[in-house]
Length: 135
Image (cartoon, rainbow, N blue to C red; front, side, top):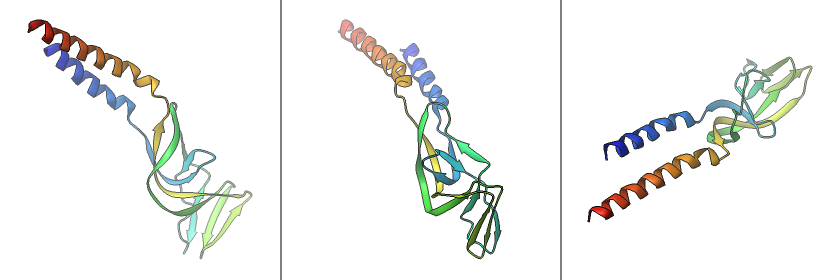
């Protein structure tokens, strides 16, 4: 029984490996990136973001889910974006539109968790059979 408890604790601790990443900024769904740097503001509304830095999806993650969302936002994919009195200007580039907020990565494949479920089912079966044989 001590071995079983030790294994359960070990599995619970290993879940930290599968921790999800998050980022705050402007998400453009087609590009699957969260742009995190606001551009230059002159009495603007802080909804204009630069093309970099950005947070891409990590390996084994397929999409972003909003933790909290605000209003819409704009990304300047040029050299410099300026927001002056609500008028947005993008030098040498174009605008991309997205959603502003905090976003969390969603893991795609459930196959990587299959070994955990199998181990737990096997251990549960062993404990159940041992208890049944004692009676």
